[in-house]
Amino acid sequence: MHDASASAPEPDPIGSWQPVPFTTTVGGREGGAMKELKCRDAGFDCEAVVTGESVDEVMAQVGPHVQQVHQTEVTPEMAEAVTGKIRDV
Image (cartoon, rainbow, N blue to C red; front, side, top):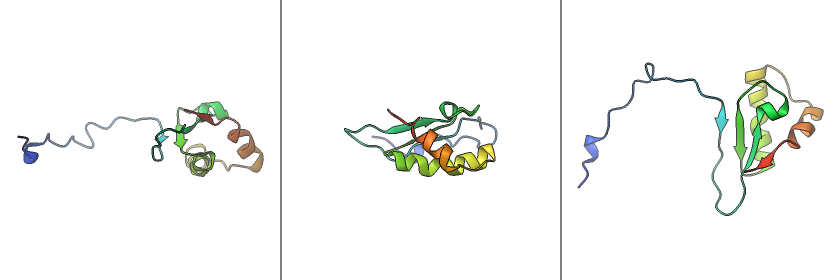
């Protein structure tokens, strides 16, 4: 029998912190392909990968990422070009 109170100690949030690329996964879907956009594929020198169940979900995350990480706005032209880079995974 497993004693829930004997769980592993929580890691030190400061001492064990490791930088990781920006990755967002929205939901999970059985039987259907998730959508993925690699920031590098959109022309940025960035390892971020944004995923979602639809192109709309991915694009909803692209704007905030581009603003926060790359300090630029997504123009309609950029949005059209980036949408074409989204792949099924």
